[in-house]
Image (tube, rainbow, N blue to C red):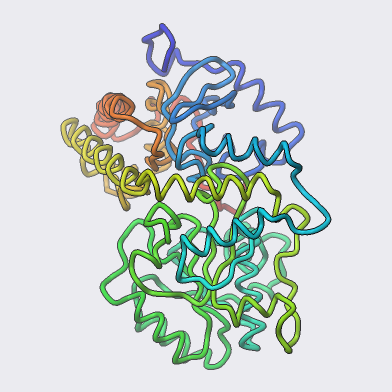
Length: 447
C-alpha cells in the first residue's frame, strides 16, 4: 500500500476503519448491506472501510491504498470510475432518472442487450440478481403448472428469496413448506439429475444452475441438461450473474453454444451500477407482458428497474467489452496472476496448501491445512498478510483495470504471506499468526 511504513501485520492497524465498523454495526444489521462484505469475513480488526476507488485500487478511511480483487463482489469488472461508464451515467443524470412512462433509453438498452446476447429473444431489467432469478422461477412455475424447483447444489448462491435461502443454514424465518418445494442436483452428473426428474416426475418446474463456475462443464454436460429439460418438460435456467461477460460478452451460453430457456445477468452488466436482467424465450417472457391470452404473471415490476443512468451504464459496459476486448484481457490478466501465485506458493513450500482455482477471469483461492482440508484459520493468516501488503483479496477475481505492476506487487505479497504460511504449517497451528478470531463463512446458523 502507499504508506511509508514497512512493518508487518502486527503493527498494521486500522483505527478509523475499526471505529467506522462500530458505527456500521450500531445502525445496520451485520454492519454491511451484503453479508459477503461483513467484517466477519476479514481478520479481526482488519476490515477496511473504503473511502473511494479508482481503477484497480481502493483507499480506506485510514489512508491506505490497496490493489483490489473481486471488486464489488465481481460487479466492477472494468475498474472503479471507468470513464466511459461515468460519462454515460452523468449524461443521463442531467436528463432525468425516472419518469411516469418508459424512457427511450429502455428501448436502446434492450436492443443493445439483445444484440450482445443474441440467444435471448426478450429482456426485462431489474436492480439485483435475486429479483431476476426469482422472476425466472416464477415464470417457469407459471409455464409448467409445477411447483418444485431443482437447483444445482454445488453453486453457492442464487437469490435472497425463500425458495433458495430456505436451503441454506440461514433458514430462520422461512416456512418448511416453502423449502420442501426446492430440491437439488449435483453439477456435472446427468444421471443423478435424470434420477431426480424421474423421482419427481411432472413436478419440477425448472432446473436452475450456473452454467460454469470454478471448473469447466464436462463435455456434453450442458447439452445433456438441455435434452433432459426438454424430455421432462421443465424450463432450463442459466444463472449468468458471474459468467455473463466474464466468460464471453454473451455469457456462458454464448461460449458453450447451449441455449437456455431463461437466463439472468447482473454484476458486470453495470460496472457497479444497480442493474440486472432476465432474458429468454419470447413465449415465456411474454407471459409477463400484455400480448398473450393466458394468466398474467407479475414479472419484475419495480419503481427503479429502469433508472436511465443504470441502463446507460449497462450500454456503456457492453460497448466497452465489445470494442476493447475486455473478456480477453480479463483472461490474460488472470492467467498471469494465477501463474505467479502458484509459483510463489510452490517456492515457499505451500503449493499444496494455497491453491488457485477457477477460470482465469474468475479466480478464487483455497487455504488448506496440514491435512489438505479447507481452513478458515489459515485463510485468516493469509488475508492478514495480504492486507498488510496492500492487497485486498477475498478472491483473486481480476478487473480489466489491473496492470502488470499490480500483478507483480500482488505476487510479491503472496510470496511473503506464503513464507509465514509455511511457518504455521511447520508449527501445526496458525493461531500465533492469526491475532484474533478466524474469519467465518457467510452461511452459518449461529453468529
